[in-house]
Length: 217
Image (tube, one colour):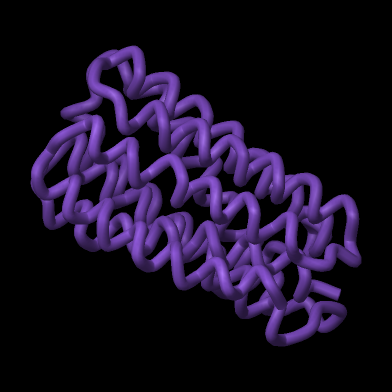
């Protein structure tokens, strides 16, 4: 239960991060973002982890998220690409973790087509603005879609505790939505509103996934 106490300093750091993002000062952003992201890694480490495989894969995803956060706090195309790569690999880790919870054959359910349709529409909307990033962004959208599908499949898995399944899905859905806001900010309509909405969704998603390691069995 000690991991839940980390939510208090996390909330304070998130407020500081939003303030720093409002001022668009990279140094201040990094001061708040790095320790805040480190807290969701700590939250996973402090949880019991009855399913070791799921725990280690989620932990890898969280650490890659921390690295991605640091990269995205820096300016420049190279830092953005490095952050994108870190998050892509992190999502791959989450997809593999979710496949360990629910076999891929059981991912086919009524929500599959709806989730895929939303992702396809997002890519079609972004495509004219992507330029040389078209293929990396397409790969990223495919992977985050798989992550959400795996989390949605967990909701239909009777072998999982209901609380754990809900936390997994809520974490993945929040992360997915935050990624859409990052894309909107980067390629369509830049502005602080994207971060005001996206950052709480992102950190909420990461903390929920971190806490899920103690709730899935």
